[in-house]
Length: 235
Image (cartoon, rainbow, N blue to C red; front, top):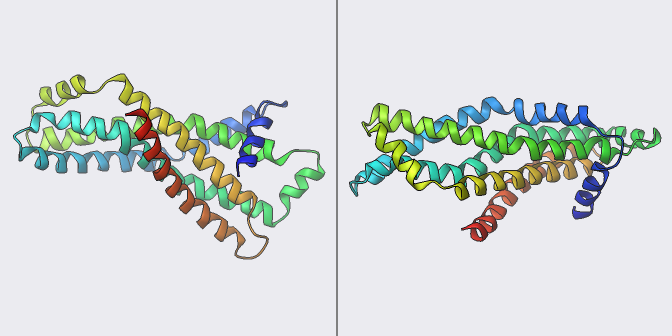
């Protein structure tokens, strides 16, 4: 798998540049996943606003709701949940598409046309994942914060000023940067694992389904494991 990743990065910097393919995959990974990221982000924020309010109320600290929601979303939940959504929405489709090409020998046909399949199929997807994931994570964070605002301020009566003032006083640039750095690494993990599993799908009737299932499960596990190590390093 690491040799596969090194080969993909090596072919990225060799001509010809696949700019159109990168733009196409930015659309398929980023734009097409926007609806599910928006929906999951707003309801995640609403749940956090509801649960956070009733937890903080036990300590008479309802004014810290904004800072608690913002830190949780920016540092952990935003990158992880948006990566889960992209894995389920786009990563599985990526593995299935490449697996179908493998089983039907379309990848071998690229070799016969003197086109390197890693440069044509894998490298643009990895670059698009590195571009799209931080943008989706930023959207998830903003939508989640305003979802918690709707519940905390609009429904439960928390002061709007204290909500944003607590957020402003507690959130620093390191919190934002660490979350975006995690999202970049998650984008690499998703595209790397899904492309590898699709590229090496077993040549049989159940090979595509097996490759898709393995890619999604492995992405979920690697995202959680890598999230722990990055959190322990960047605290």
